[in-house]
Amino acid sequence: MAAIAILFCITTIRISSGQETSFDTPQASAELMWRYIQAVDSVNSNLSAIDERLAYACAALSRTGLQGPGTSEILRDLSATGQGMVDAITIDANGTIVEVEPQEYQHIRGMDIGDQEHVKTVMDTRRPLGLDYISTVEGFDALAFTAPVFDEQGVFLGAASVLINSTEFFFAALAPFQPESGAKIGVMKPDGLVLYDLDSQQIGKNTFSDPLFQEQEEILALGRRMEGERTGLGTYEFANTTREALWTTIDFQGRQIRMVLNVDL
Image (tube, rainbow, N blue to C red):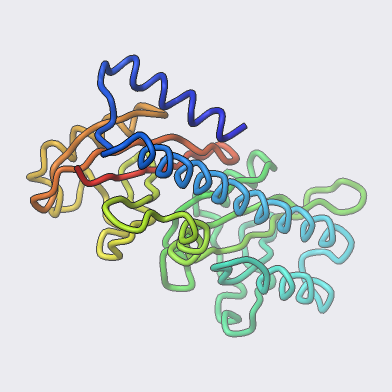
């Protein structure tokens, strides 16, 4: 389904824009598109795997509760699975961290994180929420995935949450499909935040606010399009190189990310 959607998106973009992409040959274009499609599917699959593991853990926590040896074992198993997984915690209904694994993060136990937007949203809606790029109490930026926990009678207890090192996560998902040269696949939020780029210096920068991009009118204009358009095609110049950017959107639990294929012209 994702492959069909992306190919339809590409066809639609070319018709609506009245221009063709500038790949050297149809064969090169097809190879890049296939890598891009596989990359998008890979990220989707890895996000689904996180969702499944977190859902399984929440089901187990309904039997053990939010704290105790049984809970620690569930969190330990959860934090040890998946590329880029940092830690796993339980949070009570007041927003206090109750348990945490692995042990190296025990210093955050008892901290109140109820004011964090993703925690407040899950507590209010009692629905899972992922892909939140946050500044963590652990001391770094990461992607948070959070889901509600109910006891076996259906009473709301709080939530479980995992933190993912986004650079490691996207590197693992995208590396097998990155073009060999002259092109790259990256990830952005609609608000302009760069979640992943092969140029590590760009990760964590925001297109609209970082000084690096403030004099780059073509990049700012393209960023504004990416902010409002789920799919698109555009051209920009950066560091004396003209590039073409094709993007599409992954939706996950109410959040969006833009998957961007950049090609040197």
